[in-house]
Length: 77
Image 1 (tube, rainbow, N blue to C red):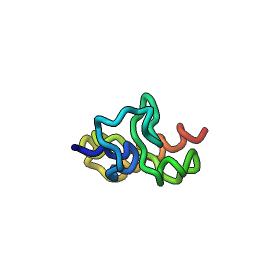
Image 2: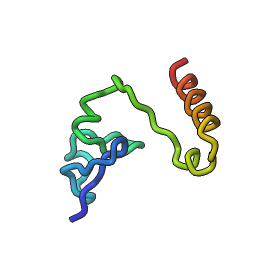
Image 3: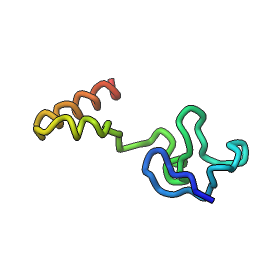
Image 4: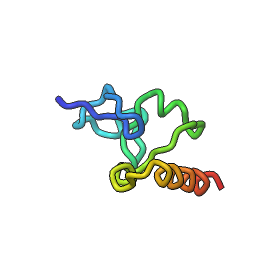
């Protein structure tokens, strides 16, 4: 059976896709499955995700950096 992957870091989790969410640890409704490391980190995070289309659609590194910084400021204000 295919294993589910962590929605934050992408690592394979011990849970099969078919395993009901009530039988899992680290499944967040509306988001998906987290690995134990990401789940245990809770809200104490030092990373943020960046939409892939930003990387593809922004060929200028300085502009991409500006987008990332703006997103960081929005998340932490």
